Length: 112
Length: 114
Image (cartoon, rainbow over all chains, first blue to last red; front, side, top):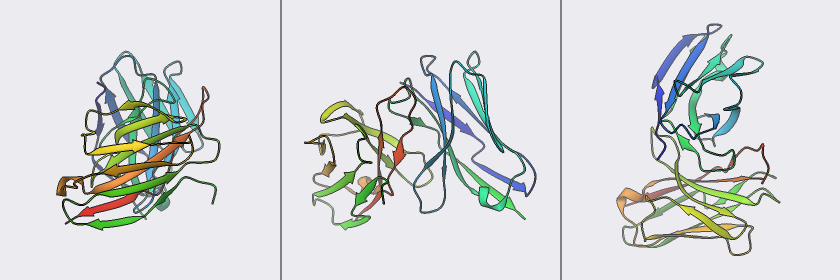
C-alpha cells in the first residue's frame, strides 16, 4: 500500500521567513496530494491540494510543488505569520475521493 | 453549524466495555470516512462509505470494530471489548461525489480506555 514520509517533524521559523515541508510517497499510482493544517485541539483543514497533472499550484502565501518522477511533493509558506503556527500534514491518494494516506506531520512554530 | 459533527466529543471507558460513536456528515455529502489519530501522528484510514455501502476497510480494523451508515446519512462506529490501545481520536470526514472535492473533517471523538 501507499506509504507517505514527511520531513521535518518540527520546524521553527522567524516571522516573515519562509517554511518548506517535504513529503515522499511510494505508490506511483497516487495522483492526489492534499495538505491539511491542524491547530491544537481542532480538526484538520485542507489548505491546498494538487493533482498529478499539475507541477505547481499557488494560493496567496502558500504553494505546493509536485515531482512525479521522484515521487515527492513540497509545501511552501512564504512571509510566515504567527497564525501559521500549527501541525501540517501531507497526504496522498489514488483518487481525489479515495482514502487518504497521511504523513506523520510537521509542527511549525512561527516566532515573532 | 453546517459542518461535519461528531458525538460524543469525549468518551472515557473501562477496558472491555463497548462504545459507539456517531458522525453526521455535511448534508448531501455521499462519501463518509472514518480515521483514527494518535498523538503525534497523522490520521490513519479505517473505513469508507459511499451512500450506505461500505466500500473499503483498513486491515487495521479488527473484528472488534464495526461501522454502519444505514440510510446513507449519519454513520456509527462501534468498538467492542475496548482495549487500552484503542485510545485515540476518532475522526470522521465527508466529501461530495465529484471529480474535484475535499474531505471535510469533523471535530473528532477522543476515546480514553482505562
